Image 1 (cartoon, rainbow, N blue to C red):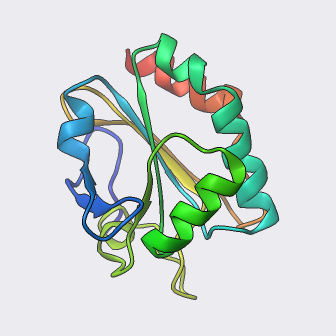
Image 2: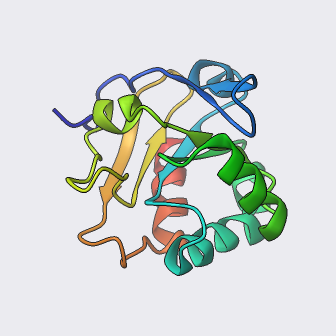
Length: 152
């Protein structure tokens, strides 16, 4: 069952740029609301364009007191290499075992994450959710920021 607006966001702790360094939703929420971006995979053109735009506008999330986490099923090694190549400074998290994408209801039948985002408020409740129709579609960042503003 997918995680829905109004429900408590499923908690997690996932590896970031190594198997030893984990980032948890609970820790991120201590600093404020969080936007979770789920994406199909590192190195693809649409994912690159999407996360490059998020990086370019990261200050707009920070100004709202919000954190950004991005999740795919790629390995931490892939995330580290991709982040270094693209200059991505927010955490890219590895859901290698596909537990979190299942918990949020965004596991594609081919085994990768759907392109989606969730706005989670400071109390851990999902305030907005959007899942794109195809992996080629990406959410307009203005819409993400509007949904974030609605959660503040």
